[in-house]
Amino acid sequence: MPCANDETTRKAYNEQTDRMLLAAITTGLKGYPVHEVLYRSPETAEEAIRISITVAQADVQERRNNAFQVEMEADITPSGRMMVEILVRVG
Image (cartoon, rainbow, N blue to C red; front, side):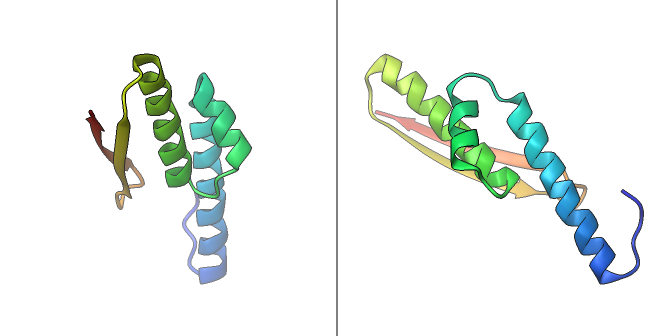
C-alpha cells in the first residue's frame, strides 16, 4: 500500500488491507471451516481464524468422540504478520 500522510487516507488503506487479509484467509480454508466462516461472515481476520480453528478442532474431536476445549490468542505484529498461539485441551 502507498504511504499516506492524512488520517482519512490512512484509515481507508488500513480498511482495504484488512478486507484483503480476510479474503485471503477465507480463500485458503478447506473443508468444514470454510463453510462456517462464510456462514458467519466475520468482520476481522482474527474472527475468521478463531472460527476456523474452533470448527476444525470440533471436527477432529467429533471423530474421536472426546470433549474438547480450544483457547486461542491471535496478535497482529507491527509488521502486519499474524502471530497465533493455540492451546488445545483434550480430555
